[in-house]
Image (cartoon, rainbow, N blue to C red; front, top):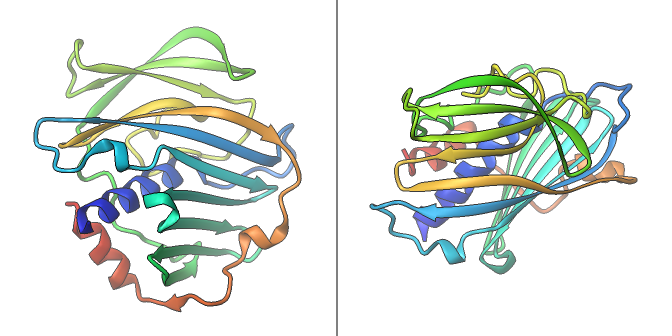
Length: 230
């Protein structure tokens, strides 16, 4: 069970580091929701049944603020990452069988350990191909694991949703757009990630503030959670 929670937490960090950076104020899509589907493919040394792993991640955004949420175990495991640019705060909320934990720091000081230490090296080859995906014009790139021409995956990314440096500090840093389809390959799992719905709509400001009832924890606690899967 500890491995299950660690994997879900690891996955959340990967997603938020990619998709939850600062939104520019004047964009054609400045408020709404993106829902990603998550497809886990078990590799040889896997010990967790992929059928019990979460299959959806929801990102909500309003102007410069974002929140990412992933649920597992029928809602018993709940992880939320809040990026509040207005208040210059970053918040991570963990709800594990009603054990509620909260870690908070300023955006300028936040330094979460590298969530990509378990991911294989990739090289990214951009193409001139443009395709329509979920109603957005997307550029296409091909990522190769360890430089292999056979072990590769497709990346679709768009500039129709304008985010400043959306993939900074990740293996996808050369992708200058919001990724709507991509892949993460770990030692025990391959995770196909794809946007299912992208909708514009009102998001309450309360979504971007830490709720009451959570126990404040230290950065060390967050680091220990990450170390479980390294």
